[in-house]
Image (cartoon, rainbow, N blue to C red; front, side, top):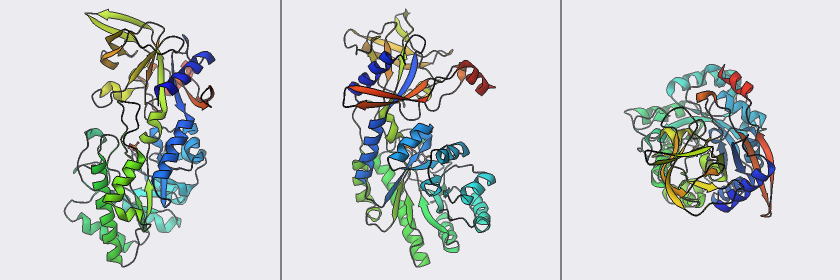
Length: 425
Ligand SMILES: Cc1ncc(COP(=O)(O)O)c(C=O)c1O
């Protein structure tokens, strides 16, 4: 999000009393920003592409209803995400199910409701084969293919390595022939799916994986003598740049790279499908935390905030890969710009590594200021965890009207201690 939009939302939130001494941590989603992002996605790809939102990026019901209203479907990967998508009003045919460890029960539900299904491996395929006839399912079904094109910058987020836990390993000995035969013998297999990685993968790596999957589709279709594979699902994974306000790369840059590498996807020969998550929400959301204390220890300046690993989990545990921009505002939400010092910003949790920024040059932070954790609209506040039994913060949808007023909707209230203790058990 641009700093001026974050500032506008932050100031309005402080004025409305959504952030103060009693409520020192809250998260915000710029709803118009999400709508604009989705509109740029639709404009960048031809009409025969269907875009499903990856619910894991933000599975809150308001988030799912927002993306649905903007014309997206939904990619889900657990029984909980599936239930949330159904409750948000997605039609079964708008949903695609991707979990790697699907139980028989969940497969029965997915097939029974005719929800799209991406099969991970041959053991799952055997289960699905048994169920397809029994349920009379109209699900669009296919395999998730691991094209084994290698790793991106973050190995933990790279899903198309030679040994990845996801999908059917295309290049292992005998596998290409086995998958072509599986499609030949089972005409209800009509789609192919791949997802090369989530953050840290170059457009080149992503498109090279998709190229291999389209080649496989062509091989299957020529082996069966007609176009049995009709849908190519290219997954999500468009990386988000966390180092500036700029959106880089854009959906249209990705579409251009795809068009060069895989023109078949743009000819109308196949229905194209995408599953973007991070690129829809990350830059349209932020977390704001009040600074409780500041101190100097052994020459190190430390500002203690309320945002730590409970909400910025990846940033704390893998700081080199998930560095986020911080902005500093005073207690009324005015940006601080002067008096830069090298500082660390710590979270509230009881371990020394609970740090969200180390050695950062920032305007001198003082108690009562707010730090904004930029670009955290995806995979941050929607997935809190409960180390130290901290309550999950409130999340607000913020609609910026004509650049001068902001209307808020409560997406999730701040968790009460009782509710949090009930979750912990
Ligand atoms: C199968 C699948 N599709 C889509 C996504 C969404 O990826 P991203 O949020 O990077 O777009 C993921 C993320 O892990 C995934 O595993």
